[in-house]
Image (tube, each protein chain N blue to C red):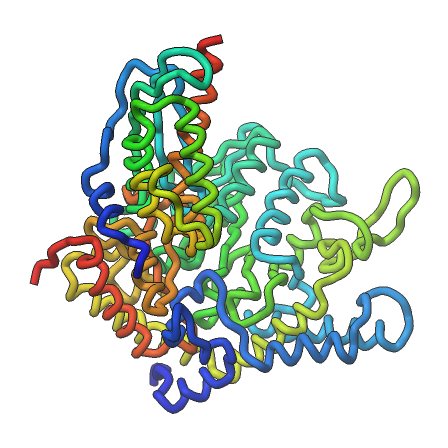
Length: 148
Length: 431
């Protein structure tokens, strides 16, 4: 089965930047109602607009290997980048995951995220992979609101 | 003599009646379907009965006077009689709904409507209000929990629940303080859809009656799997779904004691369920029609009656014995794997054919994925029983559930596939 690539299992066993930290401007709690998996994710950004920098992504995640690995990959890929970069990465991840396997993903854009490309062939698991990304989008929205 | 499980020859004949069981999945693996607790497959006899209704008799039943309407009505009412007989009931006491969830909502809404004096009901039994209590259990499917939560919110009544022990049985220690004169309804499941736990229905119904409460039973996981006689059980109202017992999707059943159904306020209103209508108001038809608003689910009822005939021919005693044997085989196999924990009773006498388990260090979604890759289809998640999982301190579980067509070989296929799970996630398995 090409779903459980070594990279996914590495992230699952040793999630990057795991744990909830301060400071943060936005926090989101997301639940997958079919299985009860949960993620709480915080975003700390500095600066304004699309050039603002994602200083930290911290999270507490309880779920399957796909959802935990996806949160870990998100934190790794987005921390230190700009908000514009985060949005581009999210769009590329979402496009790949909802492509039913048509889009293999671009490593230059989503980094380790390409390891999750196999998920797209299993519609029931797409939600697992997108859970933390939904939390990030929501947390970022709140962080931007907090700055107004 | 106790009923015997099906022989290999009998099983082969039964399986030949279910076309879907011969298909392959995930790149050529034979289908090993162990999710009959979610929905069962349908034998040709059921598919044919439903198709024959549409091809030969199709009409809006209980309407009009033409020949098709007459024949359609006759088919629908004959189906009701067959389905009633299957659970030891009178045809007039059986109400068709779209599914068991609707049947349970019908009862919960009857109490809500009764609280406001609406729904054409009479008597105080269905008048729920502040100071009254509804008792459920922590092992309920959401379908027998949320309708009661909402009924309590609407009426000001209080929801209470019987907790679950660590091994997944009802903890009846404090039942006498939970079930009191304030309790109007005690709603509980016959067999847990997750753990397979078989509850002491007769004892619980008697206790409910002793305090003047009505006993409402969710029988979705018992009617398809063991002989059920509503009179023997002693409950007041009972709901189950057709699609879990070889019947079509889209039909459920509510049975009730006649005098209660007579008193019970209606839920859905509209066509078919009326006696007289003016611009100011309406009076309602007798039971069961007053609970069957809208065009009845006639083809589905006819299909469900064919499913009852099919199960009756197999013999419910033998179906039960067979599922018990298959369950025992799985429990035995899981017990040999110390990295697997069975959730729920280990004693076969206290359980039915649904087995939920946890694999050390691997999330149920991942367990299910590895099994599915080998054609073994089980259910993963919280199986619409989130509070139960919370009480057992697991986020979710993997569940295998059986039907008359399940073979010992399929249990072995599950166990073999399960042995691939730890290694897939780089876990060492103790020898």
